[in-house]
Structures are given as structure tokens and as C-alpha cells.
Length: 309
Image (cartoon, rainbow, N blue to C red; front, side, top):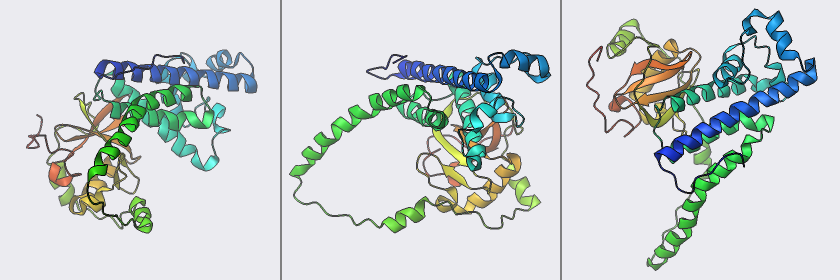
């Protein structure tokens, strides 16, 4: 094991563990790319690339931000070839989207914008695993160890709770309809999204910043995915806003995808600022209220916002 696994998690140990995982991820990814490119083009591949391609003149393979950004954002990236042979062709876009999500998550952890909880740490582990698994990176061992250190103590308590409940006189059986569960997990596309200019103006009246302006406020633990069809999904539960809050989902989804056509991961502040990852920062996308969003995600926040505040 290349890092210490905490026995007890507090905010400091959560942050240290997250940063260690991100550092190992960048190191393992860089080593994998170096080995693959050396096999394909020789051990001097990087020196040659710097000499022949101006865009890579100052490229540092060991710089996590530079490495992830080149892979995620550069469609003509010269180092993607090291990974493409390990990813099924039909999943390449999804894979590089996952790397872009990892780039955004690294940003919030480095700048301490994330809530330092074990739930957030597990979410980061899941994001890392999605990128590391196709390449078989050694980091998967540390990810498993961190996950087990958080979940196994919880799992150990469950039998005790079950035994404590045995004193109850009656237990009612709950019928589960598997077909209904499958249907609930399916994302239903928004049909023929129609939003008028007046409706856009009405929604935009709540804007507190310009789209893309840097948001440095602390982010809530909730996170979401904005799909290309305008659907908004809660990453933790797979619930979609159109089923939870259909009155606002269609117009809000249309506005968000118009402002962020590539979709992707969304986060939110306590003030109701929806954020997306723009370039090197989490930036403003829109302002929402608790009545227009997933229930109780903003229930403890104040949403009577004034423009510019």
C-alpha cells in the first residue's frame, strides 16, 4: 500500500486521503502513458513530441492538471493514443468525459470547495475507479482499501441492528416489483423541448453572475449530471428532475443545455448557484430555488437572491 489508510475519518483525514488518491492517480496515469508511448514510439517519445509539436513544448507529463486537461479537452491530443487501444471505440467519448469529471473533482478538492465527508470521498473513489479500471492501474488497490475502510465498519454494525430488531412482534413482508425498479432507473428523454424567449428572460432574471464566472463558494455534497437531452440526474440516487419536479425540469433543462451544450457534471452552492466546470474552474451556470429543484437539497438555504449579490 502506497498510502496510509485512516482508521478514523475526520475532515483532515478525508482531505489528506483524497489528495493522496488524486496524486497517485496522476502518477499511475502518467506512468501508464509513458510506458505505452515508449513501446509505440521509443523512450524518447516525449522529447521528440516537444521538439516537433509547438503545443507540447512546455508539456509536463507529471503535472496532474496539464495531463488531465490534455486528455479531456484536446481532441487532437497526441497522448490519447496510449489509451485508445484499451477503450472500446464506442465508449471513447464517455471515457474522456469521465476524465473531464475527474479534472473538475480534482479542482474542488485542491481548492477546498468540497465538503470533507466520507460520502464525498467515496464519490471521488467512484470517479477515479471509472478512469483507472480500463487501464488496470495499481491505484485500484488503494481505492479498494479506502472504500473498505469506510464501509466495512458500517456493515459490521448492520447485523447488530438486525438482531436488536428481532424483539419486534411482527414483521410485514414488502413486495418488490423488479420490473418497476428497472423502469425507474431508465432515463426518459425530454420530448420536443420548447422554450420561448420570454421564458428564457424570465428564468435568467434570477441570474446572480455571468455564465462561466468563477464560483469559489463551498459546494454542497449533492452532485448531478446534465444530459445532452436536457435531463438532470441526481448522481447519488439516479433520480431525474423531470420525474421529481416536472413543472420546472423542462424549462430549466433547456436553459442549462443552451448554456452548457456539452452537458456534464453539475454541483451547487448553499445559495442555489448551479455550477459547471468551465476550463480550469467551477463556474456559474444558473440560480435555482428549492421549489424548482430536488426536494430538500436546498431546504436549509436562503434563495431570495438579488442580482449581483
